[in-house]
Amino acid sequence: MKARLHLWIRLILLAAVMALLFVVDTATNYEVAAAVFYALVVLTAAPFLNRRVLIRLSALCVALTVLSFVLTAKGNLSTGLANMGISVVAILMATWLILKMDAARQAAQDAHAKLVRIARIKSLEGLTTSIAHEINQPLAAIVTSGTACGHWLAHDPPNLDRARQALGRIVQDAGRASAIVARVRSLTRGDPPSTTVFSFNEAVQEVIGVSSGEIARHGIALVLELAPDLPPVHADRVQIQQVIGNLLLNAIEAILSGPAQSRVIHMASEVVGGMVQLSIRDSGPGIPAGVRDHLFEAFWTTKEDGMGIGLSISRTLVEANGGQIEAEAVKTGGAIFRFTVPPVQQENSR
Ligand SMILES: Nc1ncnc2c1ncn2[C@@H]1O[C@H](COP(=O)(O)OP(=O)(O)OP(=O)(O)O)[C@@H](O)[C@H]1O
Ligand SMILES: [Mg+2]
Image 1 (cartoon, rainbow, N blue to C red):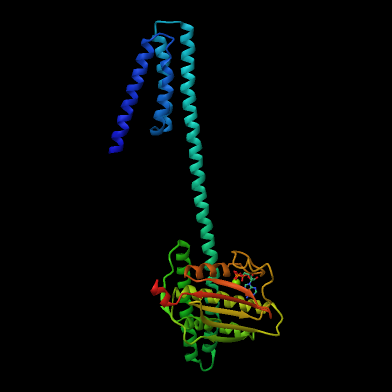
Image 2: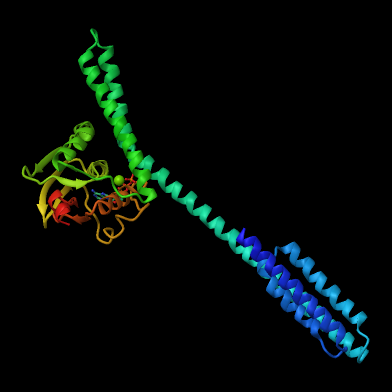
């Protein structure tokens, strides 16, 4: 309502200025080129008029200039003609410039909108890739348990107890998969992690439970050194388990990529510098010099079928939970990855 009133006041003022210019231009002799000021009228009106109305206003100004020239009776005719020409050119130039600027502004706006759309598609791409990567493990576990369940049911007589256990694992892993999707989505939206207080060692054991079939199948020995007196941690349990799962999978893949002699994964939890830390050491080929800096980069991989995002997601998750992650080559061979999580005491004393 107020904006409409403002627009009307401006239009009336504009009309008054134009009328005044017309009177002055007509009443004075040819030598006074008052009509040049119509160009200023067009420039002043441009911000609150749309393209079509602006072109009409400009045409009206030209018409008034010509009419003033026709109606003027005093002065030198050729000077009057020249002044009229200058005024008309000034009005047309002002209009042309404004329309050009408007078109450029519109093009810039379109380009910006396009960029925003591309960024959204890109982040959707990232989201899809992350979800696909992160739910791979629970999905593989579901397939394994499903196969086992079918096996126990096909037994003669069917082993219903074992089949029921396999079904229980399927339900658990499906729940984990859907929790991971929710966490990855909220992470891309920039939501803070949904933190709880939980036992770190228990969370580690749960992930090991999911991967134990894979570990045993490849004859890998898992050595666990979980400190019994760890303080509970304060973090997003699902996200921390995603990190452990990624590191464990990388350790398994590293071992499988090398010679088969020594197949050991060492996992140790302890308190270091006031933070709860998990380290995962494997007997794989280790990390070549110069590669360490790239490990956590997105889409950096040395694996033929790798996406190269496991470590980049892990770093995002660890840092979102207030911890840090690092990698180191072990002198005697293999690699070691460590990450930290804040214990509950530290969180409370903040
Ligand atoms: N335990 C490890 N030992 C040696 N190199 C490793 C280890 N973990 C990771 N790397 C190196 O870091 C790279 C990046 O790991 P990352 O988990 O981000 O991706 P990826 O395992 O290649 O693929 P994916 O996205 O499927 O996990 C790996 O390709 C590998 O070269
Ligand atoms: Mg990986």
